[in-house]
Each structure stands twice: as structure tokens, then as C-alpha cells.
Image (cartoon, rainbow, N blue to C red; front, top):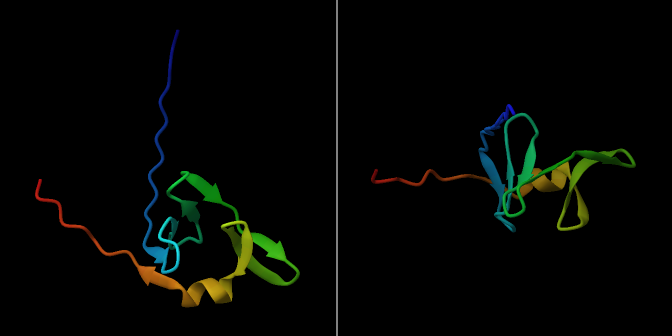
Length: 76
């Protein structure tokens, strides 16, 4: 029996100030790091956005709530 292992690495640069579990990449990718789910961008009316904690947040609202992820220094 042949088994394969596939690993995906995402580069995440931004996180929400209100909920640090949701992190964003430069390409519009949103990931909930607590549940490790990729959140899809959806269209609600004419607004693009994401469902954060079960509620729709438009991109304009989310941009004002983003902060850059600080790098942690690892002694190893």
C-alpha cells in the first residue's frame, strides 16, 4: 500500500485586533488558526467580506481592524 503526505504552508501577515484567531495573507486568504479552517470570501449584496464568528464583516470594516503579526524571537 502506498501512502502520500501532503503539507500546505501559508504565509500569514495580518491578524484581527479584536480576535487574533483570524489571520490573513497577502493574497486575500483568511484562516481561523484555532480551528485551522480556511474561510472563504463571500459576496453579501454588493459587499465582499468574510464570516467572522458567524457574522458577516465587509472588507472595508476588516481593513480598519487589521494589525501586522509581530515576529516572535525563538532562541533555537
